[in-house]
Amino acid sequence: MTEKKPKKQPAAKKPEELQKEYHELKNLLQRNHAEFQNYKKRTEEDKQRFVKLSNEELIKKILPILDNFELALNNTENKEEFVKGMEMIYSQLTQTLEDEGLQKIPATGKFNPELHEALLATEDKEKEPNTITEELQKGYTLNGKVIRHSKVRITKKGDKK
Image 1: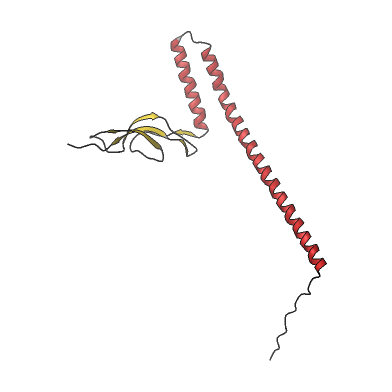
Image 2: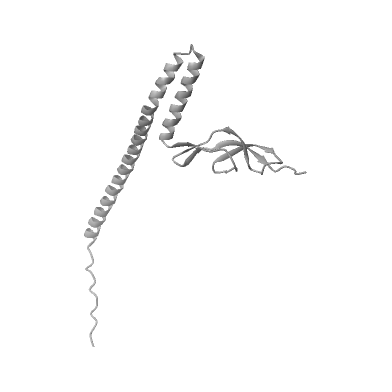
């Protein structure tokens, strides 16, 4: 039979060695904690800088529209031309925002609480309940996320006689 050899126990460390190892580990932990805190600060600063730069890009895209508004407001003598200019500026603004990912929420058909906010409900015997009858304020999504719900009037159940 084979004889089992007892496992060798590591030699017990002296209190001075344990104390030294404790201080080394404590210092390492403190350095890692400080590095992590600095990392968090840097990432937060980077995030804020990114947001500012993103805003800068959007503002640069909107500046020509602002210029067109100023030009139109300085030329208000001819009402028809002014209205035509305002319509063109509106179109330019909506196109710029759509290019940035803004989309209108359609306010037709059935009420959807994820997209719409019902402000008013009117009885209607002819339409199904929860059908949108009027858009009171446009709603928008930005890159698929609802940033403002459409405010709508809907039908509620009426007495069918």
